[in-house]
Amino acid sequence: MASGNLCFVFIFPTHVGHTNPSLPIARRLVELGHEVHYVCHDPLRLKIEATGAVFHSAVQCEPELYLGRGTNFFSMLTHIEEEFGLDPEKVVVALWQLQNVMIAKVLPGLLRLLGELKPDVIIACPVASPEGSAAAEAIGRPFVALNTFAGPGAMSTAVGVSLAAEKVTYQELDLLRRTFPANIAAVRQLKEEFGVRREAGLPFALGFLDSIGNAVFTLSTTLEDLEDPMSPDLKRDYAAAGATLVAVGPLLDHVQAVGACGILAKVKAARATGRQVVLVSMGTVVTGDMLFWGWRGRPTGEDGQPRGLSGKELCQAAWSGAFDAFGASDAEEGALIVVAVGTQTDALDGLTPPANAICCPFLPQVDILRAGVDLFLTHGGQNSFTKSLAHGTPVVVCPGFSDQITNSHKAIALGVGLKVDRPNPEGGQHVAAVAAAQYRRDVRSALLQVMAGRQFAAAANNCAERLSRAGGVNLAVDLVLQAAKRGDKSKAQVKSAATPMRQSPASFAGC
Image (tube, rainbow, N blue to C red; front, side, top):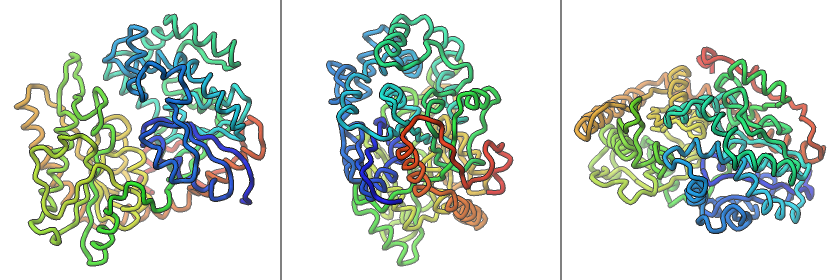
């Protein structure tokens, strides 16, 4: 790959899990001498600028959407829901109803910026940044989708679970969109003003994304036989759209200084003295402020009432299980326990971490895994799960929702670890406290079992060896450069080194 003077624009959301896998691609393109720009949100600015890319604040670039509606995506969403009289407790329903409305409001500002930058390729998250595909369509440039779910089939599960939590069927949502005046007007505006074709209703196949159907190709950050299977309808519709799906495996960055907090040096020192290292992270969603799945949220039952453990109760029970399993009275004794606790001010309220535990809001996860981790207690998010496999690290998966549950089953099928399901009891605070105490004991038991079982590490190492051959950043960058040099929107003819696509979960055992 020779250096040149191509321009790449990355359009990504405020969600860390969707944006992080794009950073190694951006860094490599910068190293090759190319011009790289990001349209993203301020909390990720330092990470983005550390790659050498130029950061553009979405809030500042897109005043038609953000002006007067707050200073971040979530405050904007709250305001725009109120403007259109939508139910604030049905966030996912609102996102689908307002999708075309928000794209129509984003495009004027985004196209002004793209007119200045003149990108050769636009790269975006197909799930949370659909405006990337629309902008590429409007200016006639190639669009590359970077899908951080476990393949396109995973979106079907994610949408289904989210709608079920809000007590709305896919058919009901389709009707809501088709009869929503603002959506109908936005679809007309997109076509007449920008030359972008979108439908008022939903696609026939649950989980189908226009951004994947319209991309010259879609990068998937796993192996093809580790992707969630697609339904026959979804497979048919993507084939009809000419979608090209390339599984490149995990996209792992260089060692990062940003956000390291000095933790990496302590991990390396522990490894040098022969101590075990246990990494603990429940992810950024359950420790965040999302309504149902966040720190204070609870899943809802069939009656629409909250039930089970809140995000706080779930995390604190999981962390306590790790402390019970490996805690020591001296900082230099036993395993080094490294815990990402998120940014909630009451994250550790009522807990007393042992002396050999280090708790930080965020951790340089890839760097720590690369330095050497004996066991990873993870929520099972797609990025964390794939990173653990890529580094040959056994896991205990404590899923919160959606694809995390699917990945917990994959961990068992692959033989790389165990899972501890989220408790979901009916009843009040006392019932939740009893369930949390049992969950804590179950987490402790699973951690000790995986740490003692050599077969889990052997299976994880086998997966790491396979993932190392998938192509990763090198393949992703090669494909992106091919798209830029070809310069049109025709579907790419690319080949993946991975095994045949869309294998069923039964094939996982051979990883």
